Image 1 (spheres, rainbow, N blue to C red):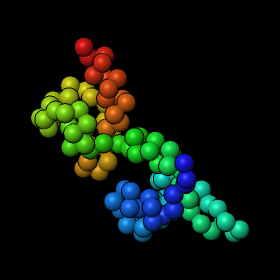
Image 2 (image 1 turned 45 degrees about the horizontal axis):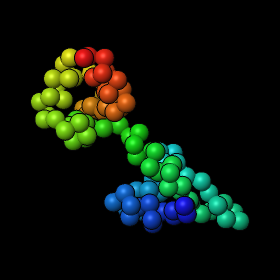
Image 3 (image 1 turned 90 degrees about the horizontal axis):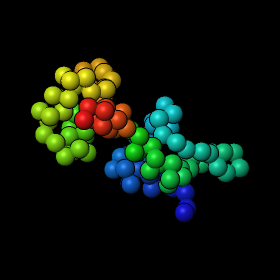
Length: 105
């Protein structure tokens, strides 16, 4: 599998090249540098796939992943579903939520 450049990652994620470079600068996305001066940014496809799978989900994202209504997600929150606050937003780790749901049954 061939590695990807900034343009290819941006297109695959529906983001701008500038956003991808910002993610790199903030060390938010897995990458490596190549070339004689390590100037070129490169991305391994499998690392990007894993990174995407581990991104925190919003309430809406969790709703879509689990195939439930938003009020169900809100009920889970009130019942103690694991989450993190990010300013006014709530973020979920799908693995933590799945574990919590399994233990509730």
